[in-house]
Length: 380
Image 1: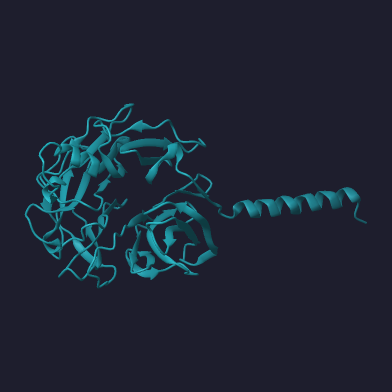
Image 2: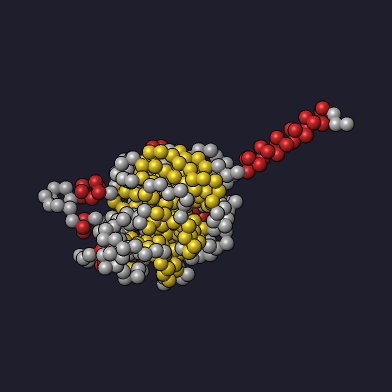
């Protein structure tokens, strides 16, 4: 005979087991970027610290969220010249050096030619700023312009860093007057944690560089250096490529992600995440769809498409799950939406796509990171 107490204990154990099962399911939370930030970029280091940069009224700010804390630290300003920053990219290198790169924004550029009584020229768009936060410091060093004679920037620049003191800055621009087909990707490398940099040198495929598409760089744990960008071959071929270097940026091998014929710049962006097995996921856009794949292969697009998609960003957690978040709408100059989809280790969907309506006013983008328990946070 089973006693009432045994029934109660058994029921309680079942409830607890059910609760544990529910808690094991990965949760995704979409929330506003802290401190009223815009165009946020997130980077999670090997210790689980989430580093975040964002723009607020032309200034770039940096904040960090430690693994055992629920909130980001009080932000500190990255740029030393007030209101000079556009969209930032960040990387964390040896011993916790924080490296941030950003172009000068259009308001700063116009201020530089104020009083010259002339129109803005392409050669005026010539600022690629770099700022560094040394370990143990509470302030970024004075910003430096590392454009090195390269100009004509529109899409964002890119940065990557490894655990051996190497820092890589990529810029899409030119040194001569010409067309998009004359634009190149220039690389500057540091071997001393950003103290000094080499002169800029072209490293691209010679197919031109799409003017307003953003670049994205990543340094993998195995030492591979990767860069994603869009070409402008014959002003109509807008193919996306990943360049990979296994010798610290001395040489690169290319891999095409897609083919797209378009006589205009689509304003694309890319995203990388490193996996535990030395593979790298990359996301990109083609026409009105977004994709991601392992090392650029086995392209996967999210289900349940309803509207145009763009600006996809990736995140992953210690469970081996991947989150793809993107913006969605018919007119990206008007309020549009945030959507996301969770995937398992094999690239299969987990649940249905998530949705949050009208979170972006115009030309939006999101940032993704994973909490210590594996849950994801999307900042918008």
